[in-house]
Image 1 (cartoon, each protein chain N blue to C red):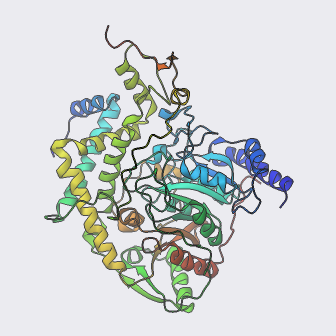
Image 2 (cartoon, rainbow over the protein chains, first blue to last red):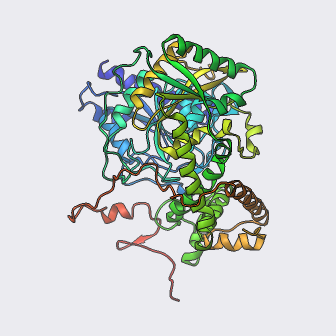
Image 3 (cartoon, one colour):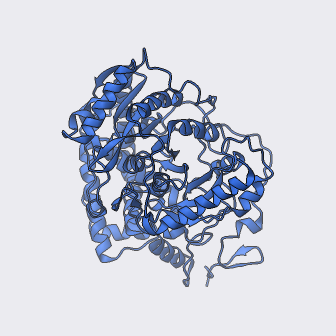
Length: 466
Length: 97
């Protein structure tokens, strides 16, 4: 592709993100590609993402665009440095065309709480996109971009991927540097991304993975070429089906889709077995997540004080500036979460609340690893149903059921996990979750490539408003 | 953990440097009821002798760097998002009246 074609492609993506705003409300801001295209002219066209339009979640710091994490408290914030992954995308030749909407400060699973309003699902505009990386998922699903960046603290890439019918990857904790990504819960946060096929998923991880000294949790594990050995057969591979989740499925399209995938994997040579974990630990996942994520968030967001960046309200005193900025800047939803988190960290409460949750987290992870021992991958439906209506999701209470929360397990354990389109339920997409051992993304992609072949869902795009 | 009153929740909010409307405080009280329900779930699990899990992996990835100066943010960059600034400082209302 020559430079003129690259230019056309970048502007086509930029204009498409702009056109889709009326339908999806997926962008927090748009980025005119002009300055990036000028730089691209100086770079080698052999770069892995040369001229590839990319959408980036709005919690990733970008010098060329405001970074608000979809929160009022960060209105107008223009970072003075790029996130590590922003630099990597640039160096790989990618062209950023949009910063994408998300649940406020990534604290949610519906994308209803963004400061700029809900993101709509491309398959039904009355339904949620899922969150917190909903804007990125929706733009990829609608075909505006083939690559989009998200972040995953408790399923925030994989849930919107499942709801929007795209691939969503949460790599191993520490595989991708989080330097310059606005944190939510630091012991769980992982940079992730969306693509339309497995080959692109493998390609993107090669671009983003690797040690970065500026993120103290960044791994030294070598980065392999994830694209080799895709679509080799699965003979000798052992794949576990998450029995607790399977048992909870109602008869219907999701279960039928999963059974078809299981049958297809068997035919491709994989040995399939059902595994189960202790139900008491399984139903404690949301409790542990609720406490750990809120406690870590309350600590991380104490720097949003209304004095140095973001929303800065006028008042007569320093403390009143902080009070007014934080009251107006955070939605009530976020303030509630910060209250819980701060309370759990009080010296008198810490042992009973935060430390207790950390201890149960260890027991859950040990049990999860016991269950997965000896298997190359674990599969389950990512979500038990397709995306709910926005009106249903608005006031839905948090569920303790493992079928709703099982994706959190790999945030607890740090293992890699991804959602791959599996089928539909009443016209809404549903994804298959594939999880693997830490740093075995190559093995995970291998299973995903076979699933892609079984289902036939590859490069599937939902046209919107045409 | 005793149930929190609306007043206690408000006091907690003020310590976190934000305010709540009356209705918001009532909703926040309900959030603490949810926390108590979660704690009841967790208390069923014996964690005697279990080490808290702070990060997913025990592998060491953080090291002290050499004590060499690094290029810091320039003053201009550090103040680029500040609304009121003067002579290289962020200007805020006087603290000592």
